[in-house]
Length: 127
Image (tube, rainbow, N blue to C red; front, side, top):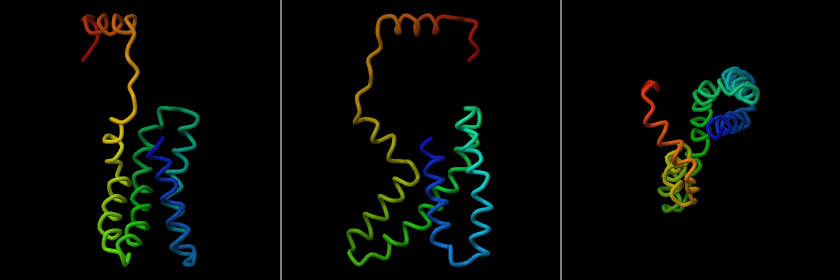
């Protein structure tokens, strides 16, 4: 749900920044509509998850399209360089795997380990 929701925020921010141009706003909303439909369908059926993620990527890119120039035009050089770098890393989702090392992982019980072992030994599962 992270990518589709980020995409929804990106489309909303892009539409908000271009609201003064009605023709451009109509085009932005037309492109954002399938992504919104995929997110709404995701609430009903989980098999629309891949479509929602793919359509959310364009919205996440739109979020970067609006936010990166603001950081890039900052007067402070630290904000200009580090802010742009952090926006790109966070916006493209590269920070999530790095941050996953900081929260604890639940240890498997003996019962769960026995199930995993049985699943690994089953020859009927297709790889």
